Image (cartoon, rainbow, N blue to C red; front, side, top):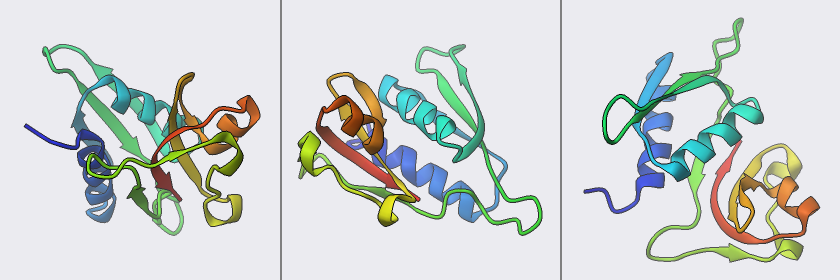
Length: 132
Protein backbone atom coordinates (compact mmCIF):
# COMPACT_ATOMS: atom_id res chain seq x y z
CA UNK A 1 0.00 0.00 0.00
CA UNK A 2 1.22 3.45 -0.94
CA UNK A 3 0.90 6.16 1.71
CA UNK A 4 1.09 9.08 -0.74
CA UNK A 5 -0.39 8.18 -4.14
CA UNK A 6 0.00 11.70 -5.56
CA UNK A 7 3.74 11.70 -4.78
CA UNK A 8 3.96 8.28 -6.45
CA UNK A 9 2.17 9.69 -9.53
CA UNK A 10 4.55 12.65 -9.75
CA UNK A 11 7.61 10.44 -9.20
CA UNK A 12 6.59 8.04 -11.97
CA UNK A 13 6.12 10.92 -14.41
CA UNK A 14 9.41 12.53 -13.31
CA UNK A 15 11.32 9.25 -13.71
CA UNK A 16 9.78 8.58 -17.13
CA UNK A 17 10.83 12.04 -18.32
CA UNK A 18 14.40 11.55 -17.08
CA UNK A 19 14.55 8.15 -18.83
CA UNK A 20 13.15 9.77 -22.05
CA UNK A 21 10.16 7.42 -22.19
CA UNK A 22 7.31 8.23 -24.53
CA UNK A 23 4.50 6.70 -22.43
CA UNK A 24 4.16 6.10 -18.69
CA UNK A 25 1.51 3.89 -17.08
CA UNK A 26 0.25 4.75 -13.61
CA UNK A 27 -2.37 3.10 -11.34
CA UNK A 28 -5.54 5.18 -11.46
CA UNK A 29 -7.51 7.07 -8.84
CA UNK A 30 -9.94 9.96 -9.16
CA UNK A 31 -7.47 12.62 -7.97
CA UNK A 32 -4.77 11.31 -10.33
CA UNK A 33 -7.24 11.47 -13.22
CA UNK A 34 -8.04 15.09 -12.39
CA UNK A 35 -4.34 16.03 -12.15
CA UNK A 36 -3.77 14.34 -15.52
CA UNK A 37 -6.58 16.39 -17.08
CA UNK A 38 -5.06 19.63 -15.75
CA UNK A 39 -1.62 18.67 -17.10
CA UNK A 40 -3.18 18.00 -20.52
CA UNK A 41 -5.19 21.24 -20.56
CA UNK A 42 -2.09 23.27 -19.75
CA UNK A 43 -0.01 21.56 -22.46
CA UNK A 44 2.46 19.68 -20.27
CA UNK A 45 1.56 16.25 -21.66
CA UNK A 46 0.75 15.18 -25.21
CA UNK A 47 -2.19 12.89 -24.50
CA UNK A 48 -3.68 10.54 -21.92
CA UNK A 49 -5.96 7.51 -21.76
CA UNK A 50 -7.89 6.05 -18.85
CA UNK A 51 -7.95 2.24 -18.95
CA UNK A 52 -10.67 0.75 -16.74
CA UNK A 53 -10.24 -2.90 -17.76
CA UNK A 54 -8.92 -3.88 -14.31
CA UNK A 55 -10.57 -3.13 -10.94
CA UNK A 56 -7.89 -0.53 -10.09
CA UNK A 57 -7.65 0.88 -13.60
CA UNK A 58 -4.65 2.69 -15.03
CA UNK A 59 -3.70 5.97 -16.65
CA UNK A 60 -1.50 5.97 -19.74
CA UNK A 61 0.19 9.32 -20.27
CA UNK A 62 2.00 10.25 -23.51
CA UNK A 63 4.77 12.63 -22.51
CA UNK A 64 5.52 15.73 -24.54
CA UNK A 65 8.97 16.62 -25.89
CA UNK A 66 10.25 19.41 -28.14
CA UNK A 67 10.76 17.80 -31.58
CA UNK A 68 14.00 19.64 -32.38
CA UNK A 69 15.82 19.83 -29.04
CA UNK A 70 14.26 16.70 -27.45
CA UNK A 71 13.69 18.66 -24.23
CA UNK A 72 10.65 17.64 -22.15
CA UNK A 73 7.72 20.03 -21.69
CA UNK A 74 7.83 19.36 -17.94
CA UNK A 75 11.05 20.64 -16.38
CA UNK A 76 10.14 19.78 -12.80
CA UNK A 77 7.28 18.44 -10.67
CA UNK A 78 7.27 19.22 -6.94
CA UNK A 79 4.93 17.77 -4.33
CA UNK A 80 3.95 20.55 -1.92
CA UNK A 81 1.19 19.30 0.37
CA UNK A 82 1.98 15.89 1.81
CA UNK A 83 0.29 13.58 4.33
CA UNK A 84 2.53 14.76 7.17
CA UNK A 85 2.15 18.47 6.43
CA UNK A 86 -0.86 19.66 4.47
CA UNK A 87 -0.55 23.04 2.75
CA UNK A 88 -3.77 25.04 2.44
CA UNK A 89 -4.01 28.51 0.91
CA UNK A 90 -6.81 30.98 0.68
CA UNK A 91 -7.85 32.60 -2.59
CA UNK A 92 -5.97 35.79 -1.75
CA UNK A 93 -2.54 34.19 -1.16
CA UNK A 94 -2.26 31.42 -3.75
CA UNK A 95 1.34 30.83 -4.92
CA UNK A 96 2.75 32.07 -8.24
CA UNK A 97 5.21 29.67 -9.82
CA UNK A 98 8.19 31.08 -11.78
CA UNK A 99 6.51 34.48 -11.92
CA UNK A 100 3.44 33.02 -13.64
CA UNK A 101 5.24 30.70 -16.10
CA UNK A 102 4.55 27.53 -14.10
CA UNK A 103 1.33 26.32 -12.51
CA UNK A 104 0.31 25.21 -9.05
CA UNK A 105 -2.29 22.43 -9.06
CA UNK A 106 -4.83 23.03 -6.30
CA UNK A 107 -7.59 20.80 -4.94
CA UNK A 108 -10.54 23.05 -4.15
CA UNK A 109 -14.16 22.55 -3.22
CA UNK A 110 -14.97 23.11 -6.91
CA UNK A 111 -12.54 20.46 -8.15
CA UNK A 112 -8.88 20.21 -9.08
CA UNK A 113 -7.63 23.28 -10.96
CA UNK A 114 -4.66 25.57 -11.47
CA UNK A 115 -3.82 28.54 -9.28
CA UNK A 116 -4.98 31.01 -11.95
CA UNK A 117 -8.38 29.33 -12.28
CA UNK A 118 -8.77 29.26 -8.49
CA UNK A 119 -8.00 33.00 -8.30
CA UNK A 120 -10.62 33.83 -10.91
CA UNK A 121 -13.22 31.69 -9.08
CA UNK A 122 -12.05 33.17 -5.74
CA UNK A 123 -11.58 29.79 -4.04
CA UNK A 124 -8.69 28.43 -2.04
CA UNK A 125 -7.70 24.90 -1.24
CA UNK A 126 -4.91 22.39 -0.79
CA UNK A 127 -1.82 23.08 -2.90
CA UNK A 128 -1.02 19.65 -4.35
CA UNK A 129 2.02 20.32 -6.55
CA UNK A 130 4.00 22.77 -8.67
CA UNK A 131 4.61 22.09 -12.36
CA UNK A 132 7.00 24.01 -14.58
